[in-house]
Length: 461
Image 1: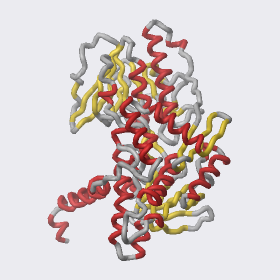
Image 2: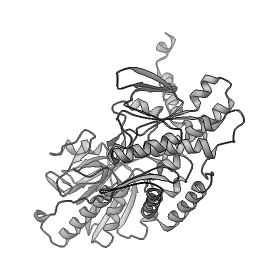
Image 3: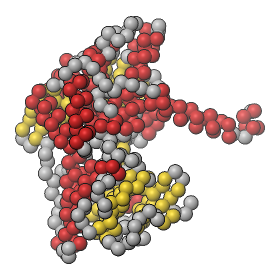
């Protein structure tokens, strides 16, 4: 289908900026240009701005999806120079200075004079994308709701099962990847089982659920250093989480996983509910840029940008956030936010007449890293300062509350935290069959459709 010109834009009389993505980088870039003499078009695959660091709390019933995913167009509704469009950007034409986006079978062309690519990253299964059917990642609202459905559904199925082996499989929860997301997921599944659901069933004991945290690396939370990693591991073990390091997952299926240990031996873990948090892969738009320019990509598909965050040969095209490979800048929210600030400052200066040849290089200020392990326990590293336990946990709460978008969101999230952390209750434990099994149902429909479309002669053979 030939792309249609984007007719939703207003009169073309100001500098046109297109922003791809509504995450931390995209949203902050739009906000920073609020008073600039530009017309902004933001194109994103979802209608919301996602606060990704709290997805695990949606998955474990602490907060609702709405508290971490406000509608982008509502967030920006008072900013008159920005238009928010829903669509999946499939192509960037550098020569023609336009992007192509798809929405429900229709394609649209949106021209730009400056392009800010903040399309983020997805889950990486290291070439084994079929693992996703049985081990969802933690990168979207859909992922979080599916994981919540699978966790709670496993308990429900175990309650009805009279087969000890099947019951053990259903009550074994495996988290793959011992980075911040994996540690947070494992800790909250353990607390959900041992506190929130305790006494809720009549034929199973939820406190006896088995939670396993796996990683091919030799340590928990490697970026935090040996000391904090050991403290996080000790707290997880106290919660009953089994930590298995040096364990590489080689296969995932409906009933469990196959693991290769450091000594080369293979073993099987029967587990009905698996969560994948072991890697990221940048948006495919990086490959699109590389095919048209001198752009180079790293192993994760991230764009190796120039010092000013633009791409070689195209000073009007910037890449920020998880899509940008910048030495010393981790794939965290602060990297995207600071990248957006730098790019928009550069753009505003040049609109006022600054020489592009005098651009300043991007400089990242590391504000530290934090991860929660359980209620009242977290680890934090800010420069040379390391914290753990209750102090780090309070610091984590305050920091994440500050970065949530909107006053109402901050209040509702705070109330949810009070309910959860000061009691054993969780307010978001409702699940539906569609949430838990939509991915597998879609796979079954695809197989059925393929079977129905086979020639009759072949079906009869």
